[in-house]
Image (cartoon, rainbow, N blue to C red; front, side):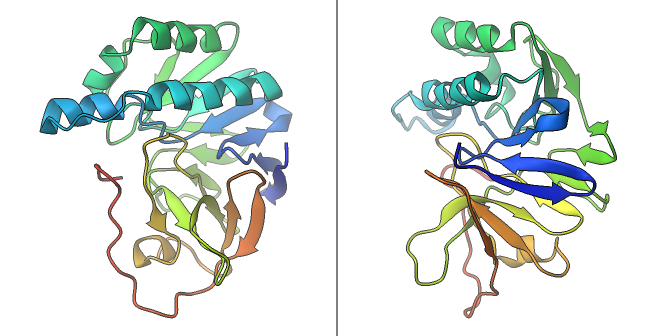
Length: 232
């Protein structure tokens, strides 16, 4: 899988190159910020028409990760939909795909800032999920051993090309990359992210292979980073 395994607390976790997190001992697959229906939401609110394929692309990637890992539980860390109306506007084909992915496994939807209420879909709807001393939520707080999303982190190895979506982690916090196809990102060196971490921070870059590198402070003042078409 070209993945990267690491220890977080007392647990062995694996960052998949797709941006999903695999917890083998729990047979749990965790993804964050799918933002399904983003093109639909942009069209409704601004009239700008984007190719309506991001939901299919994101669900295809999720289907692949589920086929490879065969999880007992899938945990979505919030902002699974770009807004609550997007959850209701899935095509019949996308709805069928999602239903088939849920079949035979536990499916946990955590609320995000884009989808703060219950969804009319199968699964269990929660604000946070706790297991084995780990706390899963959408937006980072001060909790020890916390796994969250929301910020869509990205990082570029200095002198080695463009930024890639990434996991960010230190001894007490893990932030997942955005999993969705139409999602932008926030630089790992942006003060919004650096203030959340203490000590050494590691980025695990997504792509063909998950690559683990230390995050080096930016040599230049951070410029504003705006996610394409949406706030985090």
